[in-house]
Length: 96
Image (cartoon, rainbow, N blue to C red; front, side, top):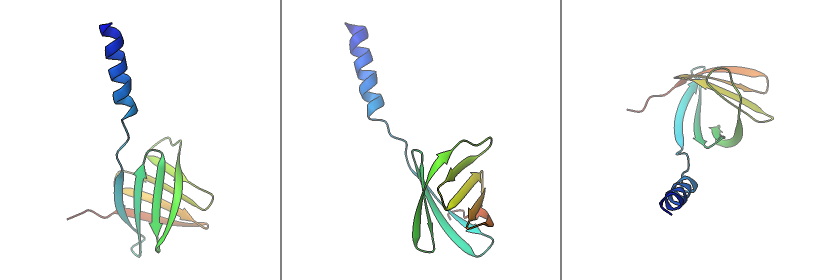
């Protein structure tokens, strides 16, 4: 009975677990500011007051998110954004 109760409590705790969201801002090629919000396997990317939703893809290194229009890859404080065939190098904007 104790094992069953422990198992049930563990399952209930896992059901309530949700990955927290991570919000970051980047400056790309010194001119374009983007903001990202990662929650679970989805990245919301805000650029020029437009929001793009990207899904996580496998990556040998770092984190990679894509949709039909955009590829966003990040590792550490650096990232790469590819949109409409244009490639941008982005750096993390550190909060004060």
